[in-house]
Image 1: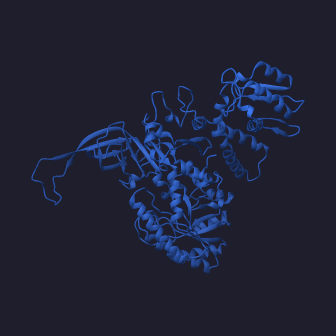
Image 2 (image 1 turned 120 degrees about the vertical axis):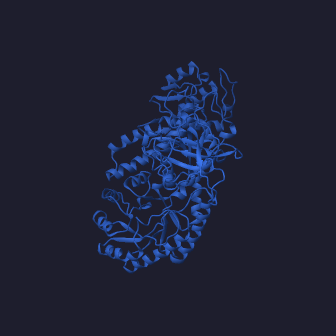
Image 3 (image 1 turned 45 degrees about the vertical axis):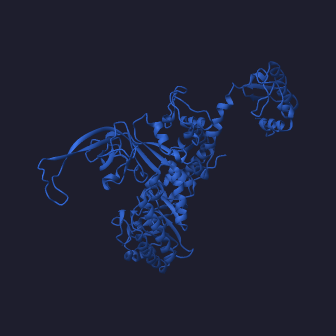
Length: 626
């Protein structure tokens, strides 16, 4: 590439060279490879043809009185000394790049520079929101520098080289820290069958701090074992997040709820790749705090695609929402109305009611949240008095709903409150049916979700038929539960004798008066309730372990403990498992919801490492590869 800044004209040598190749058959002729290289479809040329190109074509399009720098890939065999002398006499500086340089620079173009736009746009949006005014030249320079620095990070460069075919990249080749992809490096003594990696590609996703990490894109049939095999040299726990599963779930949602817009509950799982993918799929978001709102805004999501769905908002958080035009928010008491009147009177308010049914849910919410439907008229009257804008009604039947009828009752109650608002003169245009949609990859959850969709659609047709009301929901678990699998390593094993009560199932004593015992295998793994298994405190046995042993192996009564010094750090007990050894892996599926948000630093145990995978075809539906 060369140009004349004065005339603002630019010439692309590659375009000119390619054009000539297409029309000149002579360029396909030449000597055999060696001291004189044959021009071929790969871009090589012999010395005579190259010199002819410089004299008869290149020289005609360059400025006469200016020096021109011409960078050439390092094939010295077709650039003799006479060519350099001719170029110097015609104000052309030939700079020979070392051989294969273009090959090794290709990853920069393919894997790094394409991200600069996304990084720079994200920084621009963030800076504009912070300054609340247009950007000037003082803003641009640091943003550009940061974008280049982040795009050319070590992990991104390594992944870019693999994507362009320069693979593997071992520690012996480059003495640099290669996190988070270090575990994917191969030594000379290791190999992976071609069938295992034929559909593996690398993609790059921005982290919250705009640094770069990898998303390993693996064919679905290789889900799990390939990555576990590659990282098993470390004993630290890790998870695999299947972004393709989230894409599939979005398709299921759109098919099951064609009239309901999903506002993903950020609190459920806020890993950047998850949020980035959802934003790029056009989803909206349910946020509960300033930080959650900021995360979504930093993705470039429009504020109208956010609902601040926490009925009790810290004043500084409310001010932040106002400053960033996040207008849609929930309330359920008069104190919240007074706060909103003072800090954000232009907000678009959604009255959260408390469903009065007693249907079965995993985690009920009505004790803490919501206004009784019979008390709704008082709150609506107070909002009217304060001249606030109420636009709709919301409810949440509870997390992990197990009875579809809960939605029917709540939608009917919402219609009652809707009519109250309309009668008072409010422009009621929104119904938020909340969350509670199960999403584990187990048959019971699948059946329940199907039942819920049937009940919800029928209830909406009955009570909210028409196009005058927008229906939204706040699914969380549905989208991410089945997408995440956590692998834990057995760090210790102990076999203990447990006393068996000398009583039959009928309540009678055994004839044998001797004390009876049975052996229990206790496995200690390196993650527990202070890590990703907090739910085990509330719901014992909720997470079921899996292993890599054959299904027909003998099983034993087993218990799995977490790694900390707390005796309540119990994951599951009375579970049948084959005989496992220290150093082997136990993994848990359906771990995507509320597992990572509750992690603590108790005993300074290592946190799970992150790996993301996706089916290639699903990924390209969202991010087409050029």
